[in-house]
Length: 271
Length: 154
Figure (tube, rainbow over the protein chains, first blue to last red):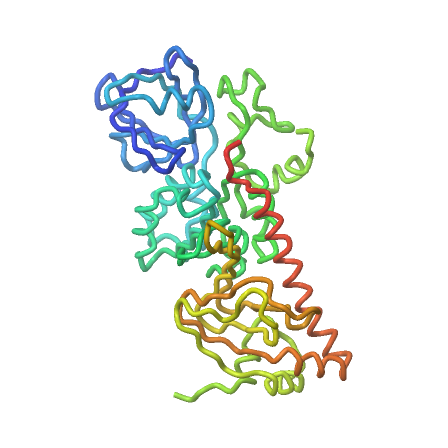
């Protein structure tokens, strides 16, 4: 349970209020294995510890990437970190996107806002074994064009012939040549076979509720939809109960859940 | 290459899916093929609304002008989608600017012509407005989600 020391190697601003930290183990170039969708507890010494999804390539064990949004005390302090500063790290924790189980099928990744961060490792993994999958579609929605995460990378992905990328924003000023509308509006025209599709969804909870409805309307089975939940976490190992979600703990039984397993709990507002 | 007739184009559109072929022929009589260049206005806010469009290719941005800020895009409509139902509902005025984002090909339907046919044939009227109701419900739901501003800072 004690955090391991990690050096900050880079801090890259992504948008106005999001940034990516690149970390390296302080005890040498040891390997750090994780599965797409898992998270770490990152400790800014003297300030606090928070869960952050791993956003880098699971095939790259040299640097460990975390993308987060500056929203509170710890993330504000984190944004001030400089190269060679030390942070503490515990992890990886939690369940992951079952990308191996999706082999032979179409994969639809639906991300909203910073929800793209925990999905990026899944996309890296799928693209590294591209021939094992059918169509791969990324549907990304965010607030405005200035809030687009990993913009450069999205443009690169968009230029690939074996990946369909559709991005939309909720609002834009005239001159924006991309799409305007919520991410759910991309689902009816996305090219995939709903009967042979696995969908991974991550974003604000309301966005995930509407997205899962739209995917089902298109014909995707509930048991082929996976979502990543977020709750306040403390221990990350299911002891403290802070992240209880119905009969489950998001830190231990999640964050990635098969939709049909948690559907009822999503509709209970008291949970 | 054979050019498709309007009736054939209507038959391929999801909006008119399962519509009786005789109705497709009637609707084709109210339609014309139109093309818009990138950046071209298809209609402006406040214009009399005489037509609605079925987008065949390209995309159209619905914009609203904000004084002091410029034009804001509130929605983009793409291939296969229907644009501009205000020609069927009083007071028959466009509520937004419609601007072609890319080169856009569409079928423009004369609202008065369609309205007359719907008045004369209640079954066609029901089929037609049932389809529009579905689109309106879908867009209302999407707009409500948009209004929630779910990606805003907590």
